[in-house]
Image (cartoon, rainbow, N blue to C red; front, side, top):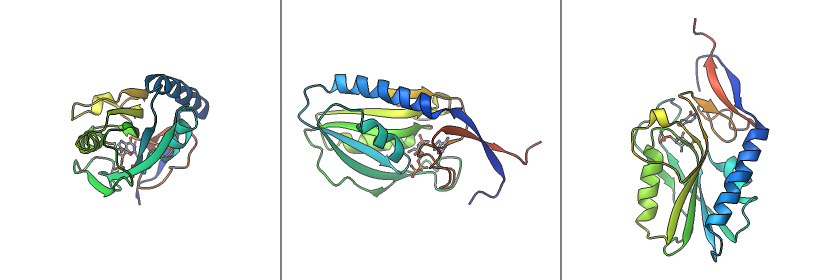
Length: 181
Ligand SMILES: O=P(O)(O)OC[C@H]1O[C@H](OP(=O)(O)OP(=O)(O)O)[C@H](O)[C@@H]1O
Ligand code: HPA
């Protein structure tokens, strides 16, 4: 539980998110056109809202699978140790794969997951991330498609949490502590 009081200032509205998700889905559909099946892999828990919206806009035969990775716990900074808490149910060897991530911050989570999944030899593996904080990067990795580049702010909402709270907000907001001067 966060002990300090905070408020959340809206940064990206539900309307802007929906419009961007539609654009991303259009590009992804064009990229994978002709695939017999795209395995869409959501990284739990943060991507659960984004993946739900994104897959409904993909005009492709899709299978949905999930991988749970965790490195933040209840903190605002990465432990830099990525733990895989739940693996995929299905095989991805020889298949087209799209990894769906909510946010790329230091890059530790995504690089760990991409390395793991590439070792299973998918046919094509690409990444779609809703948010990117490029100024915080510690590992050299980029998503193939990014929804929004954002400044160095701790964000919540649309699936993203602060110590497991605020995932259910329909917008992306930044956390502002109210006990600071
Ligand atoms: O680029 P990084 O610095 O690695 O940060 C990004 C990751 O951090 C968050 O996951 P978290 O460990 O909080 O788990 P969660 O998805 O269950 O909230 C977020 O959902 C990303 O997966
Ligand atoms: O800004 C963030 N908010 C919530 N979780 C996160 N994990 C990495 N960056 C963030």
